[in-house]
Length: 166
Image (tube, rainbow, N blue to C red; front, side):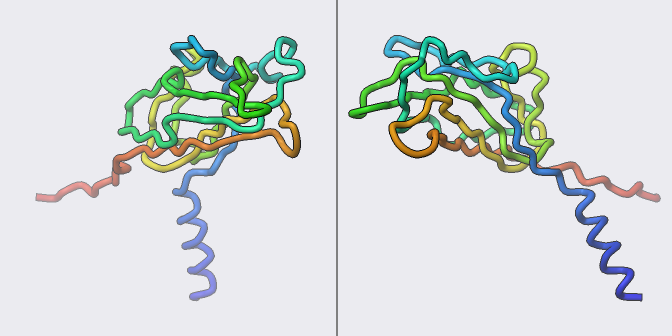
């Protein structure tokens, strides 16, 4: 009896947990000296254009903020991020091509607003995840550079309540 109960219990527990997804959803360019907003758009499947950035090398990124805390149903604009790329001799690399990737439970962020305007994320359910900012331009040595931004959505999932009998 116990042998049948334990696998059933594990299956029920796993069905209530959200699946962790990793999906590239945005393409962007790093800051220029006079930028006022992070240049980000919906990912079209091929990444940002690299023609204007041929020969660029990105050895590190600086991203602010590194933590985004939201309440459920609160929106956040990716244009509020500050992303700077640096190349050889720590020089600022303007308009380095980047991609934006989400690694999180599949119900953490709703993309309805992002699909419409290309920059707004909506906190859907409580949890924690990461946005990865990835350089498309190669470094001088090694792999392409990427940095995470932690996203925390605060709140509590609604727990179904049994009907009260009075």
